[in-house]
Structure formats: C-alpha cells, structure tokens
Image (cartoon, rainbow, N blue to C red; front, side):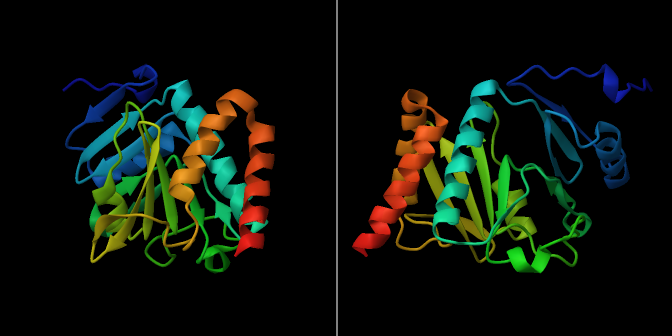
Length: 216
C-alpha cells in the first residue's frame, strides 16, 4: 500500500478531492494534520471524506451575505455568534461538516464564551449558510447534526430550508426571522454590492431595516 502525506495533495480552487473508506479515527487525524488555518472545506459521511477548495467568487458571495445578515441582526438587536467554517462533527452519526458560515442565534446564550463545542452536549448552529457554485451542499449531514435552518445561495437566489421531522423542507421565509422577506431582499443587496461596494450596501440594508420596522 502506498502512503501519501496530506501535504502532497493540492486541490485547485473550484475542485474537490474524494477519499473513500476513511475511518473516524483517520478523519480525526486528517483534521488535526490539516489544521484550522486553511482555505479548504471538508465534509465526512460514513467513511467518505470530501476536501473542497472554494473559488474566489464563492468566498465573495459568502462574505457579503454573511456581513448583510450580521448587519440585519445588529439592527434588530438580536444577539448572535458567527462561527464561520467551524468543524461540526458527531461520531455517533459518523458525519462531519464545515459550513461556509454558521450562526448561533436562539442558542447563542447556551454557547456564549465557549472555546470548544461538542455536539454530544452542545446544540448545533441555529442557521448554516452554503454558497453553491462548484461545490455541493450536504443537507443530509446538516439534518443528522440537527441544524434547524439551512440557507443555500444557488444561481443568484437564496433558498431557505427548515428541518422538519429529520428532513429539510424549502420555505418562503426564515423561521428565525418571521415576517422578513430576507430571501428576496438579501439577494438584491448581494447584487447591489457588486455595483455600489460593500460599505454602501451595508448602509442601505440598515436603512431598509429601519424603514421596514417603522412601517410595521
């Protein structure tokens, strides 16, 4: 058998590498060797390990959408904790995932101040965000981990899914923010940022929140 070191692997942006028959112990060892400061994302499902390197356009969409959502919650004075591409895993389910972005909202107080999270005792993120350009989302993994809400940006649109009886069902509005047309409006603001820039777009979103609140 030929042994290959992880440092020998080079995953080009927009591509993914699949490794089969990876045990949980090997998965843990690979995570340790890869470290936390890297550009790749991983997903693990019953022995199948995926290592993906995102494209710059993927990161652009992820960053502006994350910033918009943070600004939205700040305007509504909603406490949040954004944990980016933190590795979430559950040995009992033999699954692991690193989202593009994730938020603790309803359960923010439950994990406030914690430096390490263990899904055996801690709640999963309340909302996970994925940008699908060349990679694919793993809804079955998020469902197994119990993430209540999953957002996908696909082809310029934002699609929102709610976990219902162990499976994701597409819904028209975010369960975390009922009454707010975020699916439509955030997609518009993402496109606006390409013309007006990040800062002006964030200011426009904040004004939209204030105007909308005043009209309620």
